[in-house]
Length: 167
Image 1: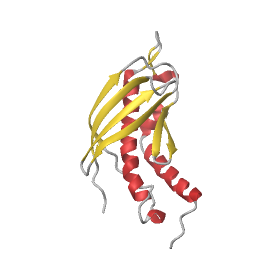
Image 2: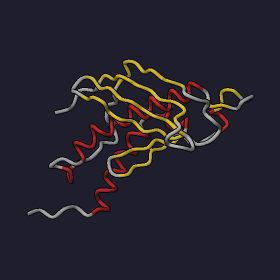
Image 3: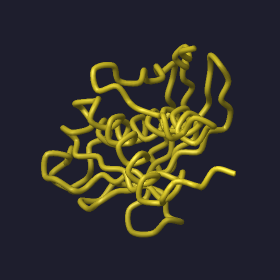
Image 4: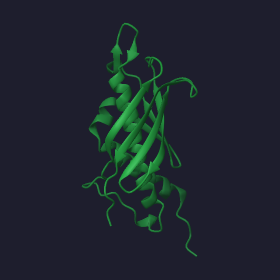
């Protein structure tokens, strides 16, 4: 019987895969979005920055920033779910992300955003739930909050065209 890999090796592989997804999209870096990983669960974090304010009189987060945050969370969650299968599969020790050829991301078909309350000038968090994921199409629901997980300030439902799987 084969011995399981040391937990540090597994964590390094998972963290490297997540970083390759995030660093592959310059707009994620521009907005400052980060991802907190606990096992297979991702929480997107949008740290507050003055450049994210749309209405300085309130002040409130820009609606476009909120929509981009939700869409980004959905796309990274879908991509993460695809990578997870490869990382945790039978050949997990051989899993590598080629730095020259990043994983292909799902393409947005549509995204409906519900702005539930004003996004305040503070950090925001989001989690996505994949409702359906097939070979060609996926449906995702995303919820965003700030101080209280039960008081959402925005939510979105999106449909995505999935990239062709290699091999």
